[in-house]
Amino acid sequence: MTRFRDELQLIAAQAPEVDLAERAVRGARRRKAATFGSAVASLVATALTATVLIIAPGDATMSGKIADVLPASGVDPAAYAYYDFCGRRWDPRKNTRTFGQECAQWRLVTSTGGSFRMPEALSVYTEQTPDNYMNTGGPLTISSDGKRVAYYSEKDQKFAVRDLADGRIWLTPQTVTRETMVKNGMVLVLSPDGRFLGLAGRTNSVVDMETGQVTEIPEGWHVRRIGNGGSPVVVSDDEDRLGLFDGGKVTPSNKSAQEVSELSADGRTLAYLDGEEIKDNVVTRGVDAIVTLDATTGKVLSKAKFTDVPKDLRFPRIGGWQSPTEVVISYIRKDSSWVRDKGGVPTQGEVTYALDVNTGRVRKLAEYTYKAWAGDLSLPGF
Image (cartoon, rainbow, N blue to C red; front, side, top):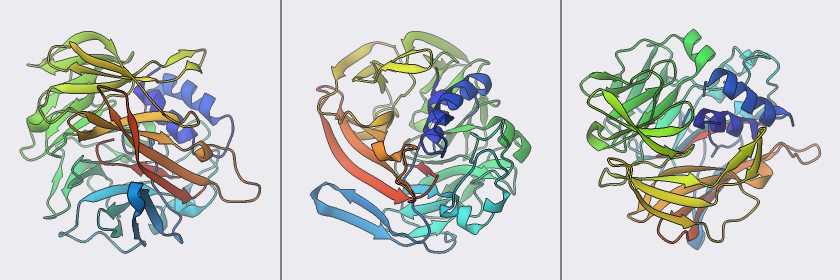
């Protein structure tokens, strides 16, 4: 069971057929092909006719309506990005070519409420088949500070990182065809400052986007997190065993984790979710603890059981650091599953919490909801 499995499972949670979750697990084991911002993993979206609402504690509300193309520069930091299959029903067993239009593009919502579509970023694949229906969208990842966005540029057949404020765009030296993307998928990992881009999939490397330098990751290992300045680089194998990549080689640890946080500001501390047990594709015990370790030594620093986490929330993910002692975790809302209101468009959504790594205390940050049959979301640092 791997992170790739989780990302496909997250897609399954948004899909319209009851049996997709089980098929997603089987498919992930077959293909190992999935995206940190494409969920993989992952959801604040809205139907085109709706208003985006982010409701946070203290009655703080931010709203914005769908606007036009992302300006060439002068864009405020991103709050999230999403697509929603144009708000229409999505049948994974049929070709979705009808979604290859403006309303299916990735849309970026800024911290000040602006909302812009990104035609240069591949969103929905239109080559869906019965055997390849879970690989639904091109990846898009937002740096934890919201200032840079990574995505697949179909025009250039390369991965791109765009600085929202000054408009600069850097392209990876590697060329990856759309056909390869559709067949294999790709996970994108940005360093917190957005300078270094990790590619995890058939291609495994770390790219310094400002210089074009490519560092290849040894076979069998995938990039999980990258520190500012390009170091340290945390990797994992197909069994989710963590390792540290340095000097051209990987030093494995004896720790395994499906979900790991970004590295802390000091570049050393890594947090991961622990406690899940799975037997025969069935979760027999859910995630219930947070562990931190020194990424450079592998030494466990702390472990704490969660407190007061709602039991009806599923598929936890972990992102960046809310404070020196808190990481952000995210859950799909209970009503984001395939359980639909009779005759109505389902409500998708996600809830974020700050989780104290020392005490296990959980406090709610925000809840996101939208009406759509299926969709995808990218949050900064996830």
